[in-house]
Image (cartoon, rainbow, N blue to C red; front, side, top):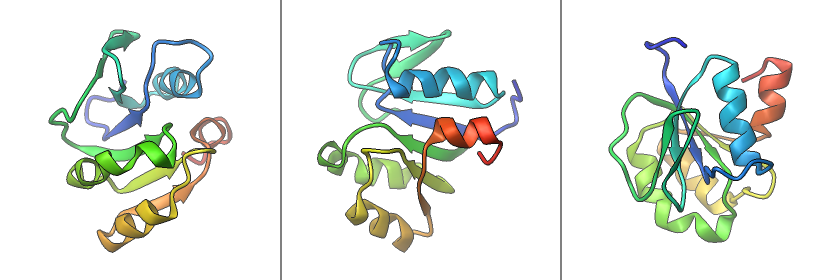
Length: 123
């Protein structure tokens, strides 16, 4: 793992195998990416803690969303405060309102699937 690499925050992280956020965390690690995990319940994935609330995180390059648009508004200001380069809205997480807010802050919103992007080399 590259310790200088910028990080990806997986929003909606869970220890439950088979959930897309869990699969994405493992896939990001397999592809050599540094990750931070944000979920509803504390836990861990491959030794990485799942944070709850609004932890202080630095050097965030990408936020990948695995929560539905109805659950995103409480996170708007927090995610903007991380100053990511981009936010990936995975299928089911698309949110035109939040995408507009991010664009106004200079953050690139992307409607895509993190797992597909990793598998085809476009991440």
